[in-house]
Length: 370
Image (cartoon, rainbow, N blue to C red):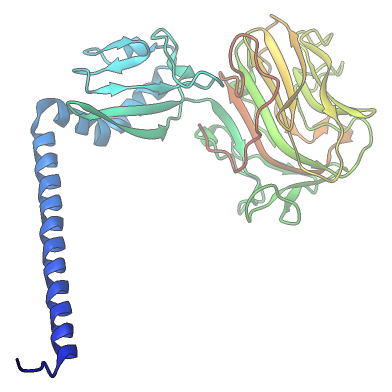
């Protein structure tokens, strides 16, 4: 037997051939997967039900949202005349074309009651795309809950702050009074800014609007603030500065060691809320504050922890007055910084169940106008 003189060359050649074989197999497998996926998609979109679902998901989404926007007093049963609603699932043509809706309430992930008003709906959860499968998509739906949203990241060319809600045309400009300005030295989120108030004539003024008239409905006021002065009577916001001093609502009012919330329906007494605690005053640090009404129950929160709760069936009045951030009466002014100021009407954020909650996790990023 003759000795093999070039074992290394033969070995290298075998490895190369083996590698080519593996690559060929992988290529064939990849082509097969792509072809199969293409066939599945073709079959899927060729069915009547799936074609309808694709149209809903792609071209029909905008029309659906527009319908929601203009029909707050409708229920889930009403959103499609040819469909039906059972257990909160709105069906278009068959069990495959289903839309589910996420609830605003903590502990209730999806709305189950088909008689729930559309104004309570927050998120379209899923739309079916194949006969035996529901593929989920998730989109924030503008339903008019956020009436005012101030990121306060900077002034516009006219020296005013702008509303970032979907109703911005109704409320702009948000006038900066006194020396109120934007500041990047203290901000809660990102690389933007906040509104800075020096405590001497500085405040923001939003035009009079029905959006600040809550009536007896649910609402949420919340914001981030960074106080630098602990003097009494310095507020965060007010609505309706009357001669008697009884505002429609007055929030973040400092007295002693705490902040308080007041509200009046008659201009003569604090008959909705009188000195309801919003927690102890914190200086030189960011805190999240919120006032929420759900039904006839009110809640106040500091950094997500409940500070006070009470019941009142009294409706807020409809008044003609600007909303003022950083001023009470005409001579008491907030000193410090305010960021991510939001007013939500028709929704009690973070409140779940009949008895409410005692805490939640404050937002960790700039708000989205939902």
